[in-house]
Length: 210
Image (cartoon, rainbow, N blue to C red; front, side):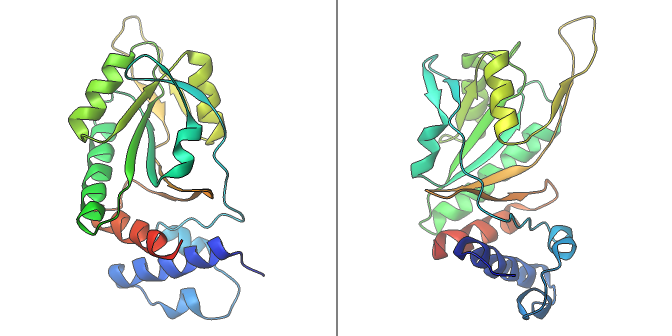
């Protein structure tokens, strides 16, 4: 099957991550049909084509409108979660922040982005405080229920509010972190079992080659 330039970059970067993980690199790079299951088992997700960044309007921590078009000119790590999340969101956003710091130490600037899937409780101030506490450059975003739903659908994420009789409810949601490339959209996502070093290694590979 013919590969696009971005797909070839994915394969090269998958090989780099495989080296870090101690995998056998020739299984990824040899000229045989791509074993997508093997790549996914290693935490590498190869899209048939780069998935463009849909234009969605949200609300910034300042309360002003903010559109996802702003992501097109920079490298980003995008995560959907909520500030009341008891475990996954704090751990994953901190993991992303640590990866961003590892990249910055290499001279590679990547912006961490947090989009809430709990607009009922996550006000602009709440997402702003949460984002700033995780990383000084993290962008925190909220919006109306309709705007959040549009953003979630655009990035094909999942979330569902659990039934509760008070405000202390939980929200089930997907937990992937998306790597967004300037002018290409998002080409890869990371599972939550990947370490900051794994994420930084893969992201650096893309940055060096795009």
